[in-house]
Structures are given as structure tokens and as C-alpha cells.
Length: 416
Image (cartoon, rainbow, N blue to C red; front, side):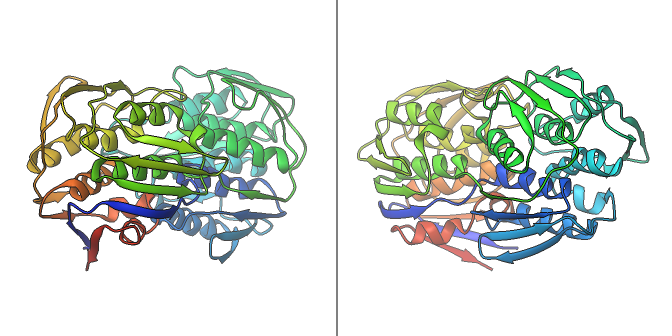
């Protein structure tokens, strides 16, 4: 099992190219099931989750030609309308094949995703929405069995804001008969990116970027070209790294307006952040100021950046409060940060972070994707050596993070 060894205390300086967004690429890959024509995709990140999704779609018969960060998908020969447990258990986003399969082929068999380390992620909103569109769905033996001769347009109001639920229902609605209205829809940039691809494929969608999507179903979708948006979470992670370790980083192929809430908080911490159309520069000297925040749905502060900013708060000159409202078990990184000398207490859904003048390297263990990133940030700022175990979590969502950090001055290496 790979580990990361970090010798902290090195300032970061240079350029980092941000990869395409994992959370945009996964539903966009599933959109390849909606047409027999070819989708040409660019800026696809090279991540473990993306590779897993490609393997799943390949098993269904979707042909995939990969050249670097470019993919050509063709759904002409899709025949196996099933997502087996062996694939779904490794990546919950596999549920995103349900809507496209049902819309185009009229049936699907998809394993229930099972548990998740950071908390409950129920798929009942997906199921209720598809049932409102006329699908017959039963759950048996850990699988969702869905059938519909033809999905019908409907008005769907989800009980909660759900990103993958919005994406699944949006893809299904593109081929349904009549008009579908999705109220309380997720507004994340990744949802918007999927919607722009679907429009390029011939879908009729109004309200893109809002919490009310109106879809006029069409008989068929066609091929298209699309470039995946920049990964706002990778962007925010590297901004936090520069703010914690100090230095001067330029992040390329990304946009500040994808993560306004995060940028505002990092400026509040003392980071000097400037930006252009496709770049962000972050400069930091001295100890950060404490920043308190509350996670919430977009355009609020993203839960996927909670652990990374908390790592920065660990070094702040003062005390901050972090409140997690999205997942009930997303403080597993706290114990590991405290092993590095942080002063964090948990009170229900709130973490009270007492900033300390310095962190000291120690062996730590990654527990999930974003927790992994927080430990890297803390290790970069800590004195001495930090050894991070179970970094397969990190590889799910970051494209060669250690190589990118090494190129800007970090002393970090992967140990086999």
C-alpha cells in the first residue's frame, strides 16, 4: 500500500496546472449512455474514480478510446444494462448510470451503493424522481431493478438538495416524453457543466445554473464535443497548501468564480489572492488568521473543502469554529490532525479549532478523500517528517498530487 512521506517547512513557489473536475467528469461519462453517437471529451482527469467509471461503462458495452486527457465515447453497442455490486461498492457515483439506462433502453439493474465513510448518502431521491416519471422500480437482493417503456415528463421536488440525484434525473428527463421540472435542483458548477454537455447533445434545458431546471424531452440525443470544467476542489486544496506552507503559487486552467465562498475565506485568513480568466495567484507570508465557516450547498461553503481549510485553521493565530451540515461523520481527520499537534475539539456538528504556533510531523492515516488532502496540507506546514498511510483515498480525487507539489518546492515523495 502506497504512502506519502513529507518533510515539511518548505515554501511553495511556481505554477500548477489544475485538472478537470472529478465530480463533473463522472456524470459526463455516464451521459455517453444516452446516445449511439460519439462524445468527444477533453480535460478528463486521470483519477482512480474516473478509471473505475470507465471500467464499469466498458463492461456495459460503451466503447472508450483514451488519449491522455481526451476520451472518445461511443454508445452504439451498449448491451449490458447492469451495474454490479463489485463495481458500485468502490464508487458511489456508479448510481449515475441508472437514469441514462432507463431513459434510453427502458430498463436497468443497478446495485445499491452501500455505506460511505463520511456519512449517509441515500438514493431514495433518485428512485422517487424516476417513479414520478413513470418508472416501475423494485429493490431486491441489494439491487435496484427499474423498468419503463417510456419515461414521462413530471414535476419533481426533491426533499433535499442532491447533486447526483439532480444529475440522474436531468439525464433521464432529456429523453422523456413531455416536460420535466426539477425543483430544488442542485446548482453546483459540476451540475451546470453536465447540463451544458446535454444541450450540446441536443437536449432542451432551461434554467441552467438555477434551482429550477425545465427540460423538454427529445426523441434522441446526438454526439458532441465538450471540455470538462476545472476542478474547484483541487484548486481550493492547492490554495490552502500555499496558505499553510507559505509561498507564491499560480494555479492555471481554473477560475476563481468556481469557489467564491472558499476564496473569500482564504482572503480573510490573510492570503493575497488575485485572479484572471483562467488563473489564480495565491501569496502568503506569516501566520494565518482564524476563519470560521459553515458548510452548505452551493454557492455556500463546500463540504469538500472543510477538512483542507480546517488544516489551515490549525496554524492560525486564534480560535475558529467549523460547522459541518452536509455529512454527519466528516470529522475523521480531526484525530489525525491532533496527532500532528493541532488543538481541535468536537462539539456535535461543530469543531472548535484552537490555532497553534507549529505542527510537528508524525505518522498519520487517511480516512477519506478530502481528509487525505488535509493531512497533506498539514504535513507541508509541519516541522519534521509526516508519513501518510492509505493514500489510495487521495488518488481517487487528485491527479498526481505529489508530483505537482514536488514541482513547486515541496519535499514530498510516494513510498511503495
